[in-house]
Amino acid sequence: MNCREAQGLIHGFVDSELDLVSNLEMERHIHECPGCSATHERLRAMHTAVSDNSLYFQLPAGVEDRLRARLRKVNRVENRVRAIAPSWRGIGIAAALVLCIAGTWQVATTRQRFSTTETIGEEVVASHVRSLMATHLTDVPSSDQHTVKPWFNGKLDFSPVVADFADRGFRLDGGRLDYLDNRAVAAMVYRRRQHVINLFTWPTSQPDLDIKTFDRQGYHAFRWTKHHMTYWVASDLNPEELRQFAGMLRNIE
Ligand SMILES: [Zn+2]
Image 1 (cartoon, rainbow, N blue to C red):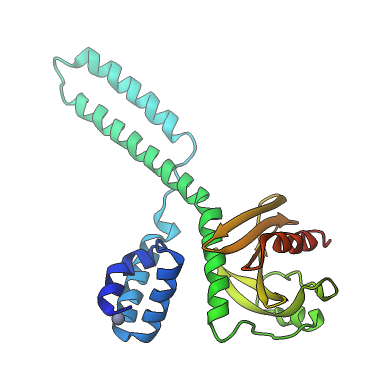
Image 2 (cartoon, rainbow, N blue to C red):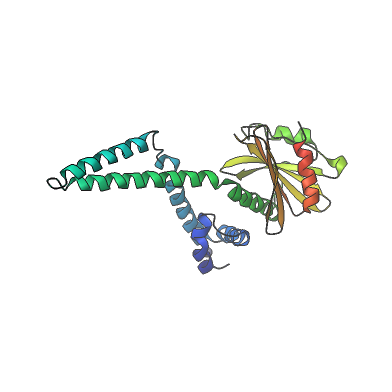
């Protein structure tokens, strides 16, 4: 990728709208090119600033009802005094505008709430691919769960599940810190023959969910939630064996 191509894709990159391959090529280019890296930093800062939650305003309960009541009243008054006071009409239009804005807010916040599974799935697969390309697949390379689990102490605000299934052909290879869903998460690395499996975990407020599949660009992923923890496994391993692995993990108490 050259700078011209990178500049054409950089807005999509900042908005997380690129496909996996373009995303990885962009990451590599930005890593190597100081010019595009500076542009990226600037855009990212701007993006963070405008998506800052403090700029979003949650409409207090009851405001919509009060506005509707006011609007009805205004309309009644307007009908009565239209002949002598045409400026009331302006107030009616203003109130309608406020209602429109309130509606837009609602749509925006609903969209924010439902963007999750799809975007997180993309992030999970991208993280898996990146872990294979990068030089450090693990921060703590060890097949001993009693070495891997304590390594996360003080690095995360939760204690991740670390299990070893070497006796069933899924060998623990280590763990590392990763970043998904806007937070630090635990990534455990397992191996099944020559295939690497990443298991990502982090806390959630969601209730328990059964295992669901998510496929992207030749990679398979499964997700579930249990005991207020979210789990994602991702690999190029065949879906049957990966599903079996997910099932074993979900059965741990
Ligand atoms: Zn460049």
